[in-house]
Length: 143
Image 1: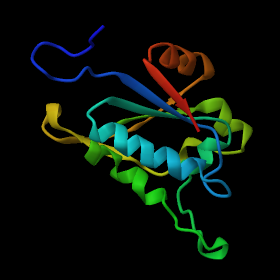
Image 2: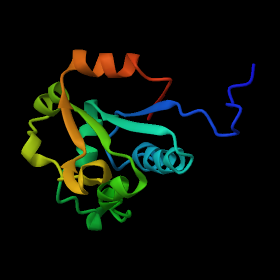
Image 3: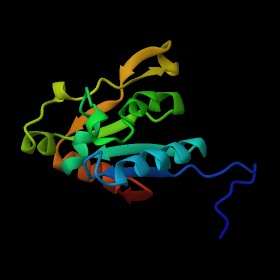
Image 4: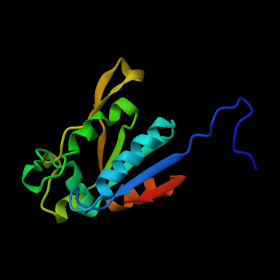
């Protein structure tokens, strides 16, 4: 069966990238970010979820000088330029790690449908809300 419409355009699918790992010490967080950018380049409906140790990926003020790896956290603030504007953070994961919403970077995008008003990209959700978001996706990739 062909999923391509007759006009030749591609079918937009909902992709959710689930980030469960701390930002450094493994390649998962950085690889996830790269795959997200690829999905966005192909004009898919891309969103990200941060839970478990993945919430550490969004902590503000990251400094990787002492561990000798590149700090890729500023890239999250550029996601809006790629129309990636839906970042879901699980509240329970924050609380379990002694973090609050104030500990995370401010990540925004300019809403072209609302006179380019700057809006937050991060939405804080509980476990059941995140489960509903996951159930609404076409593709879920976990990192």
